[in-house]
Every structure is written in structure tokens, then in C-alpha cells.
Image (cartoon, rainbow, N blue to C red; front, side, top):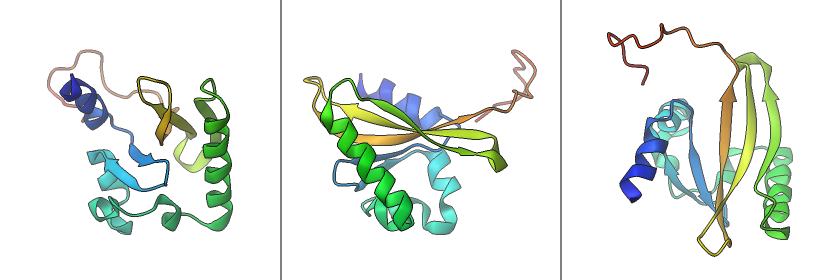
Length: 126
């Protein structure tokens, strides 16, 4: 079952950086490694996410983590709009089977229309 979930994250074209509740980066998909290559890419795994952000962003991340901890119903929050890349950013809580907070990740949703033709088997999108 684990392989199925890992495959979903690995095949996502958006960067996925997964952190534990201590802000330690525990996983990056291929898109994240490529996207953050100028900051170290895969070498970021094991480091604090907070070391990669400015003080204002760190404060927001801390506030969101506290909000996630307040209630098992607090699981996703909109955090920013990056107009330059036409995307919205969200922080998403990760919980174990008992509903306890075990970490979080940033979800990026791009608002660009798909340019591929439907069912064009000649090209891979990943």
C-alpha cells in the first residue's frame, strides 16, 4: 500500500516537500528536488524547513502548525498567491490513523490551463 501512496507523490508535477512537526524535511519528490536545486535540492532532506525561509515566512509556518495542533479539523489552509507563477500555495496537515498531527506539506496548485492534447500518447507529462 505504501508504494501506491509514494507513487502518487513522486508522479506529481508540483514540488512536494514533506516535513515532520519539528520542521525537518523528511521527503522531497523529484519535482521538488529539481525546483529547489539552486538551494541544494536533495541535500535539503534532513534540514530544517525554517532555515530555507525568511523570518516572516517562518512566523507564518509556526502559526499554521499551531493551528493544525488546535483541532483535528484544521487540516488545510491557504497561505499565499504567487502571481509570477500563476499558483496558489496551501499548507496541509499530515495525520496518522489516530488523527494525531505527524507533519505537514506545502501544496502548490497551478492555475495554468493544460497545454497537452487529451490522451496524447506520444508525450509524457512528467
